[in-house]
Length: 330
Image (cartoon, rainbow, N blue to C red):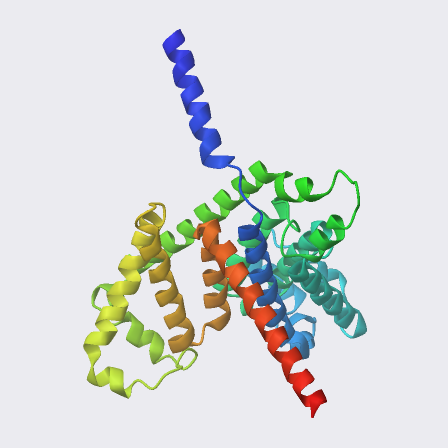
């Protein structure tokens, strides 16, 4: 009986250490800012094409959406919004929610509005959605469960100004920190699963095993972003990129958990997604995946980067002020 109780306590203790560690706010908040910028860029670009993308007279009618859904649940708020000014107003409100989410203003409300809006756009016109939209939806759902607005946000500034309030510095730094740790762990597992299954899918393809899958992508007119003549004369580089992509995506899910192997996994992710952005033009997807890597970056590194950024800003302000004084002295 005692042995069973001891084993039970060990299991519970291990489970709590895995999921409910005290976690600082900064990693999730930086991910929030990055995803908010990605949403603003992605949906800001579509602002001039709303009628074509999301109106009944556009590319995809409401009836077509029902047939494309294939009996899956995919309801959208845009089913209730007619074309014209109501659609423009909906889009403006959504972009405002994305801006509030990015800046960390009223984040507890803004994050849910952003998730609802993002899913509404995805379900209203599924033919124009691709992998980054599914990735964003998964990350946003976890962020909606997390306590946000505790660092690098307007909410933090607002709450820090409350004198003598229980929602002071202690609340900002500690409240919900164990649950925050569980949300960080969820994002980590989600990211590792995305990379792993992307690699497994490639393992099933003959073009990946034969080493020319990257060539197929680079010669596709939708993704052609670099001249391929030099690569054609040095096809071994295409083989290397193909095999690296396939094997690294599978290996990432295992390497990223080890303390010693994690830097190599993160460096490989930077190389992989930086290459996809530069060579295939997948800027938004690559940016989102690189932002997500921050959930694996040690917090000390993030704080060091923040201190360096503040110091750089301070030096820039001092240099600007010095320049103005010098001009005034003339």
